[in-house]
Amino acid sequence: MTVVVVVVGAGQAGVQVAASLREHGHAGRVVLVDTEEPLPYQRPPLSKTYLTDREPAEPTLRSAAFYAEHGIELRTGTRVRAVDVAAGVVTFGDGADLRWTDLVLATGSRPVPLAVPGTDLGGVLPLRTLADARRLRALLPSVRRVVVIGGGFIGLEVAGAALTSGAAVTVLEAAPRLLGRSVTATTAEVLLAHHRRWGIDVRVAAKATEIVGEHGKVRAVRTSDGDLLPAELVVVGIGITARDELAREAGLAVDDGIVVDAGLRTAHPHVYAIGDCARFPGPGVSTVRLESVQNATDQAEHVAQAIATGATAPYGAVPWFWSHQHGARLQMAGLTTGTDDTVVTGDPGKPAFSVYCFRGGALVGVESVNRPADHLKARKLLAEGRPVRRTEFGAGPGVTAGRLSREERS
Ligand SMILES: Cc1cc2nc3c(=O)[nH]c(=O)nc-3n(C[C@H](O)[C@H](O)[C@H](O)COP(=O)(O)OP(=O)(O)OC[C@H]3O[C@@H](n4cnc5c(N)ncnc54)[C@H](O)[C@@H]3O)c2cc1C
Image (cartoon, rainbow, N blue to C red; front, side, top):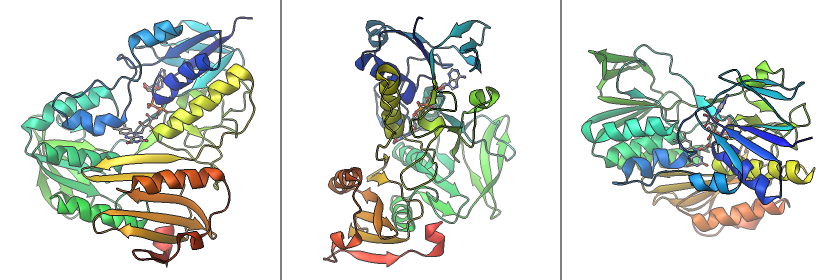
């Protein structure tokens, strides 16, 4: 039987699984499919250097020649419309079918839409794709006032880029603090102060209730406090959801993401899900869905090895993540969900510090701002897998420790 691996989605995870299949000696066909037209690209620069650099590099993941040289059949501009797991077939948007022996779902995620009037006005943009970033980049030099809706990583990075381009920037975050799903209150407070110091008007517990336009173009954003904030550009970044509809329609389990086991397999032994779209058993938590380059890359490598060599080890990479917010380089290692105790080292005032997060007395994650050495050490410590106790961090100068409040733990 001809071995055919079909990979749905040529983002960070899909491209890596195709490349790693070849590295692990897979000799069969590899078909890599994506609805988007451009050569597959990486997303992190889209909210960073791609917006700020005078002549940004194209953020392609691999050259066009790479796919040809490695016998990877790249089909861009092609949607997979349906998956039949019993028959082992995918159906493309044009109705054509392709048989697979292994299927990797790497369909990523899409922005959560903002449910207020006015999101269809010109000048109101999400930021997920290269096309979004190109539109944003083209608009930035000509706008004076920008409102960013959502104080998450992407929102804060875009706010920094807009400020760099000379605009006056307001960030609206509906929750009582920034980055509520992602970092401790300590880090969130430091970043809030950092952005305000740079001159960004960051408002927490502030919702956008309407985007107001004139002649089809955005003119202002109305807030829950009754303010009307003038703006020629509005960027919406209020979170993402998994693109798990193909799996759901195929009868596979989904729960805010495609549910997979410790080997990243769905209930079908030859159907895998990886990257932003996958919900998997995580370290110290029952299941988790992660949105990061590390997660996409490491899961891809794991699945490629399983397909190419039959390896059956459970997936167990230490999660890590980074975000650059004009002068604040945040790096995170581990998963800090359920943290009940922290130790802070360094100087949050600079900012250059790390927050060591513990659960039940053991280290579960570390957030570092402008402390790359701490981050690398944290990844190493967490990868060792032994319980790391808070006493190992001593109580020297610049070290503060504290039990977390109920709010901070949530
Ligand atoms: C602006 C931005 C900045 C970011 N910055 C960082 C950062 O600093 N650090 C970090 O770690 N992470 C960052 N991320 C997150 C990171 O880029 C994602 O976690 C990563 O791209 C996930 O890779 P993926 O392959 O799972 O999904 P994606 O990269 O989203 O790729 C999925 C692909 O699947 C395709 N697809 C979906 N459905 C179908 C279908 N039915 N048929 C065919 N194709 C389909 C989509 O078109 C898409 O191209 C950022 C993300 C964005 C948007």
